[in-house]
Length: 365
Image 1: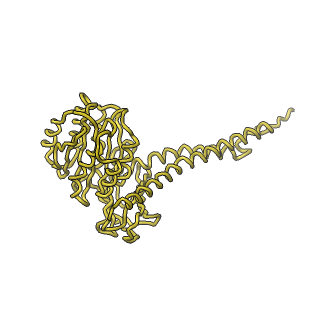
Image 2 (image 1 turned 180 degrees about the vertical axis):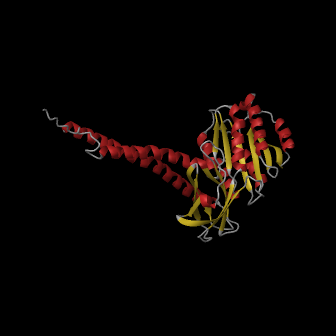
Image 3 (image 1 turned 135 degrees about the vertical axis):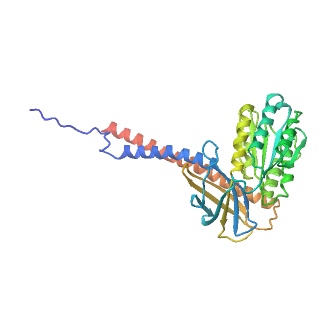
């Protein structure tokens, strides 16, 4: 009778815990990356109102990975912090039922490069946006080339808006900054209201008197989020993102003009279906910038976002105050980027180190 002695191979899972550790780290790595990518894109704090401090009223959009609004959120779904301190969520009110009017200015690029189908698709996209708004909402329209023209003042008359849009024709260059500055004017007197600018362009800024920083500072001062739509491959995506992120908006992009009507429907639905969230601040009106962090735990998953606000009822948003805001925002953004790339890199380094040590041990054994 021959007795066979079965010996475990050095790479057996039971023999050493390394493969299990490696698998665990790999799982963490691949789970961690998409979680970060989704988090900032699905939840956006559009506006912050502290007129009734310590109540802080926030208007925000919550969307799934396809950009569709997340419905049915209540107090129990929200976790809020201010400078790492817990904040009480007093009320969460869905605004999809027409509880509060929305005021939006659509700024449409009509420079020479928009000639033909692009301008027709842009006009149709504006009409689709208007179609999605509620009866109490008001929309204004501005067209721009090297000059800025008011096509329609704020109104809830959808037929009048559509007729005005039909009259838009193409012309010359691109004064995007001036167009946004002009769009802010009718919204400036609507303090505390739901407001937004949606600006479409297919090119780079080349004719404005106002600088990009002028635009961002004015939007921050008025509390109006800027939403940009970049069309085609001649845009500067970084510029469009810088206009939106600091003001509470978002940047959207379309490769072809035929995508614009669907994209504008998505943007309209996100704004129409905002939530009004009322928080109770544990802080005081100290005239300093404070960071709010909001997390939503929904059936679609966990999403979170952050934004800072100035704790004073009489803000003097001069150049120094706004520069402090910019520095704070940029440092926080840099910290996020470092965090996003550092953790996966460390995990990957650990996996690679364990792998090569394991391989070396197998050769020696």
